[in-house]
Amino acid sequence: MKNIKKNKGVLFRISGLPGSGKTRVAKKLLSEIRKSYGPTIMWSGDDIRRIFKNRDYHPDKRYKFGVQNVKLIKYFTNQKINVIFATVGLDKKIRSFTKKNISNYLEIFIRTDFKKLKKMGLRKFYKNKSVYVWGKDIKPEFPTNPDIEIKNDFKISINQISFKIIDQINKQL
Image (cartoon, rainbow, N blue to C red; front, side):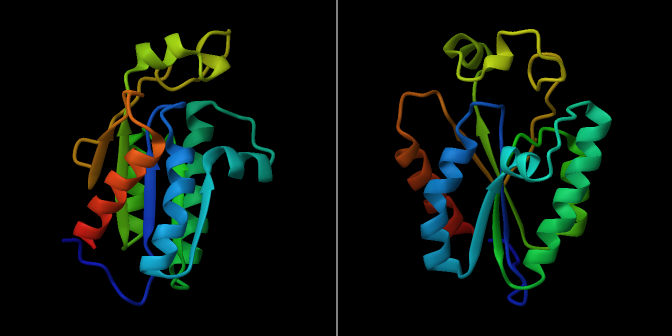
């Protein structure tokens, strides 16, 4: 069981390769987490990039943007607001920064097969000439010990995956 401080919100950080289902899972978790754990907001890495008009995907810029995200999340969790954050986030350095700066942190990792994602064509940048893409030309640094790990092989629904994650969250909190 996680040692959660009651005077702060919880960061539910969902990471995985682009196209793995992170944002769809996050949206499904939102109402259940609100009901069980209180005020909760949710956003994805794509949402925050759109809001701030950030289209720079160079690895150094990704880290800087990740730090900004963590600082924003900390602002909310310090006000007892839970945050569900769906992000690729497959960088050890930013995960370490997050763990050091957010005391109530639950890491959820959605494992998927890159070859299957590419073949399915869920994201255009896997097939076109895009650069700085996780799994394509940026080597992902997968979490070695996430709090929750779920495999998405696209054989079960996002609802089923979400139910499994909620069950694991409830066991840990």
